Image (tube, rainbow, N blue to C red; front, side, top):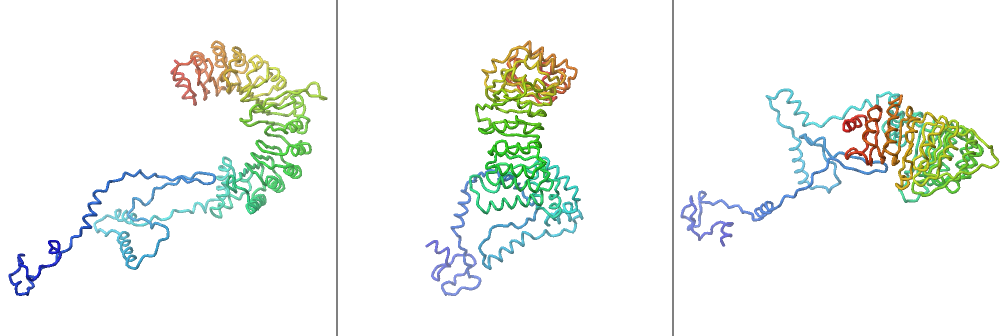
Length: 570
């Protein structure tokens, strides 16, 4: 009953004890001065809500990142989340998803709220003019920046800018994206001089999905359009990871690009004889063919070399079960002007032997300048019905026989290859543990610049390496060596000290720039001697050098870092 008395007024039979009222209530009439104002109802819901709000515990949410990473087809986009209007009183309208229509009353309420937030501050008469301008800038949206430089920039300047990017990253997809900016950029990106080196990767379908007929037609239309509108001055063309339509793409490019000089097919499959037939019939300027890590018909390439091999200067391929026919055709003299020959295998291919006739290759390719056999074990064959003696490789400048497995190359095998190579500059024998310093010292080349002789695989093989004789090599090539790598060769401390002294006493002390002594027995006195004299040394590898103090066994890059090492040694 007490709660009801608090809500309703007093009844006629009750006594009114409120101040300001008379005792006339018994008469049934109440004057205006004695009329009691109705009491407001105290809602229990509001007090309960306040109590709940107070009891709510604060949740510590992690700070919002200032960026968002979105992954695309060929790149990662880092997008900033900071809003340029966070510090301003005015903010642009947020574009959200579609919502249900509001009622008329709610719509009017929202409009009044927006007017209150967007309304400008009242003007103050005493404010100086600078303050007025600042306030006006806070309450007005920023004007769009001036983009006239993009439309008024001369096309020649844009072409030069694009050329720098193309030289570093290639024409595709950079030029395709720049052509969609505006008409001026489209004209600049269409310059034929920018499309001289093009590499096209397969990006029309997702990995693991099959190619639909419509997609195949789009690919062919794209190749046709590029060949007709962009490839008029194409020189170097590459296809990467193409599983289909390789024959079609090469045929279109060979027919539309008379200046094509280099063709690269990397990790491609389905390369048939049609590819090489189209090259032989149309590409009269082709000089380089690179089919490394691609599956192709060796018969087609051999037929192409037999008919058009006189124009080829470079051949690069991966060793396979039928590719020995290709090497045999080259040894027969199909490519008399060949200057670069590279044969490699995958690192996980294991033990890989390749029968090769060095004498036949010397007679068939007398102009060879670069000969590389990477991770391939050559098995020497004797040439039948051939000349008894050859002049070797008189123009050879680089020989690479690096391998990650066991090498059977001996001093005699190396001498048979290089007996006439007086112009050799680079010699890569990494993994060739059977080569000795005395065998290297007898080579006819006197101006060797790079010697890579590190042992990077099994340490047991490195234990069988020679213990003396390094000083013969540094004495012979001390004036010309620029890079020296003798990783894991266990020469004696005395031999290393003598060898380093020859390098320090060289007439051209500024020639040596890179020195790899990892895993050797180099001592601080020998190291101090060579560092103090070689002022141009910018790379020094001393990791795993057991005769050096702790803290010094690491890689040093830069002349300043090497000078600090010299101070520590002293």
